[in-house]
Length: 233
Image 1: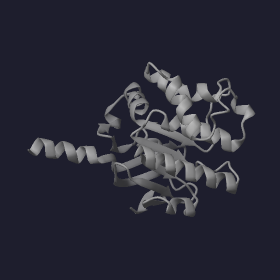
Image 2 (image 1 turned 60 degrees about the vertical axis):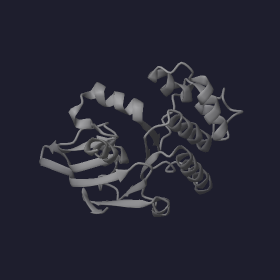
Image 3 (image 1 turned 90 degrees about the vertical axis):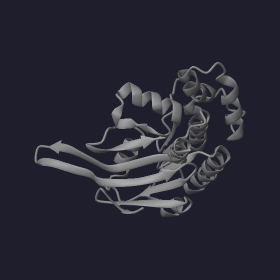
């Protein structure tokens, strides 16, 4: 019984940060970007990371997603200890468990909307990439724009493609970094509604970095950073 209980505890956690620190060397000495940050995020939770510019938000997101490694502490993503893995291992975990939405959309300009959304499925080796990609593009209102390239789409449409690409793999955790930062207020609001709807439907764990307090308030919990330290968890 103990074993099954232990595994259920692990499964209920999407993310765990233990005593995370990040320091970088500078000519004038060492700069501490993050210091002793620790928290747990449950599966299915929506959490906002907020703080002033330079507070360490983007660095924390990079560590949580395994894009960077901490100077101290560790990150467990869906049970995988990221800092114990090499770069290829972390990339494999990201491919299997993580979706990303960025402020700058990060679409490949040489691929159509459909091809951009198919890409993570193809990289994962799925037999059918086109079917799920078509279905989710339809879901985000772009069923008629499958053959359009990013340059032929508005900012809001490009972010819809990015949302479709992030959710098509059914990730365990979705990281969104200022997802409305490049959009006007009305378009941004529509993207927020779509993000939370897709997240709710998929039961994904959402980690959202934002400076927008109203957007942060849509999440179930707010983690506030100040000078590299967690001031509210």
